[in-house]
Image (cartoon, rainbow, N blue to C red; front, side, top):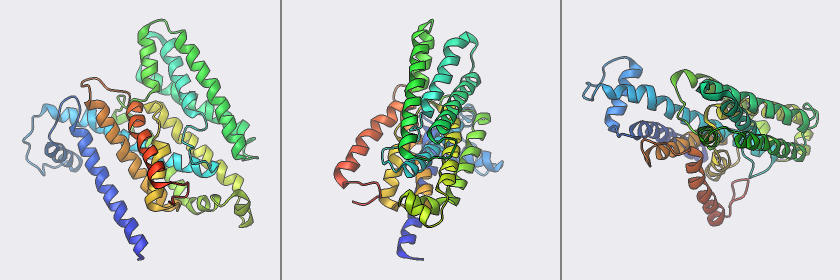
Length: 350
């Protein structure tokens, strides 16, 4: 094993440990604090279905840990990791260092779908209805961008794709604004605005299975295409010269990323900055090799969103701050710090 590979393996072990620690930390903090020792002991007992640790905590906190906080923290890890690897993929195929998972306008479509359900559905609207509306809106937006921006996969032009995404995003944002303006009461407006800024409060065990499967599937596909992604960074003409089918590769990436982001945004709303800054952080330590970049981004994205959600739940308990506010407050200055101090460039070099 080379020294570089050894450093990367050590980094992955550190990040894996940090992810586990952040999960325990996230479950511990909230409107009421639960000792971290009680959390990890209960979780180990629960997962193994054995009483490895003696029960010294109050029984009523078990439902708080398992039914409320644990699924929320796991959804944070799934969403953060999914947004991060989607950012890696979008930055690669567009060759745009400021691209993020929402560059195709998917978040705008999801917002339109969710707000339409909130405003037009009345008082009987439930969480599943809002999630379903957001998913339909996101998927519809993604398909429109794909059909127009790539001419059904025949012409994968970066400029055409970005401009189409911008135009479609503007249209759906306008639809959302019209819907909010037409809302009949302030509660509908508040719900629509809160959802559009991101929230993980809807997390339940039965609702994190689909995002998890989608993340595993898209991550696996991305790893299989890692070498092709490395070649794409050299330019489409170079990729074609070595025999790579650029159009097919980009089509697969766009469609799979659209599906993943549609599912995540439908569950959590629009959470900014993760898909933008996490890939850059990981490139600084791992370089531009996508095999390394994808795994490190998955872990860092999960850690980052868990920490942000923990802060959002803990500042003004028992109320939650929309998590998009926290990610922007932390992510924006940190991104500026990276650019200013390190002279960062897209390839991860100083």
